[in-house]
Length: 409
Ligand SMILES: [Zn+2]
Image 1: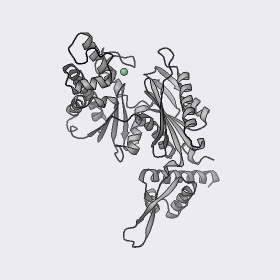
Image 2 (image 1 turned 45 degrees about the horizontal axis):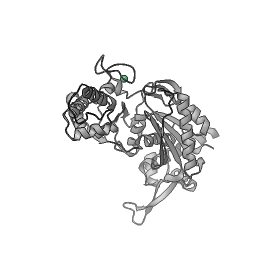
Image 3 (image 1 turned 180 degrees about the vertical axis):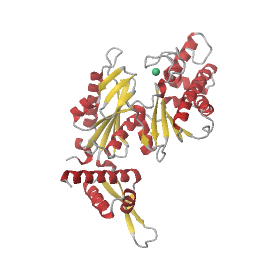
Image 4 (image 1 turned 135 degrees about the horizontal axis):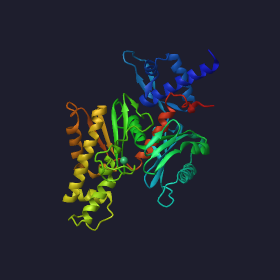
């Protein structure tokens, strides 16, 4: 066996052990050996190196069953042995966050998305992201060498392997290499991922999707997108566009969508669509507590729903029902055990969510009505940036060709 091969195998075993500690820790060495199939001696060798490097630490002891007096040391990841940066690109702003190795946010800052006129120029946005990350690194007092990677989340079709945004409907970008210039600037690995898929990964690693083999995260806000986990793996699809449920056409010739087509689910049921329908009705003189409050905020709409305003209830309930009908296609296609409904539209409450859930179940194939659970998460402000940080963490802890950065050099 060549020396290079041996080194690679050692690195892969190290990655495997580290991932087991990340996912299952605190965990005893013997259990790592049992799950991984590595010999106890190999596991001891690898974990001892991790402990010396400070990447893994002891988390107390347990007594082993049936072995009176035999105690085993539990190991866990040392969350502050390294850090990652997550940058979430939203509609008019973006968020930069620094997290530890367990995705705890230590620092975050919001920035306006650089704009020229009404357009978003890729080079300008990339320069803005670089400046914001530099500001972040200057603000937090940690050794820059401990920043192990940087993630960027963006709407639309993302080619993860090359870091190229194939199509970002909200910015009208086509084939923009986003990761490469940022990677060249900072000299650390940069990962580009679809924003909802990043959120889905966070749910899988640390949220409601932990230990769930088949689930779908649906984010409903400015747009509508889904992240799909099949048999425990994120599903990206051929071009990196799996999950674009917001752009299935529900009403041919309907209202125009951010993608340029007409009648997409997103153009009929996402937050801007709800606001537009309400504003049209208000302009037509319909009675409502929302009269005189245009342009409408989501909070104002949620308040009107709470106050049982007839117009607000009609529009929000109708949008919820249509959204549910759209999402029932995911039930039929994927037969998941769990849906995580996320995003700011969750703040509209039961008037939106109850008809959505009813329509999801009623329109699903016979036998699927009660085949899935739904959890709702309005999501805290930093949820998107944290999701992107999880993309980096997942890449760092995953055994695949170019993800051995933790041990480079
Ligand atoms: Zn569309």
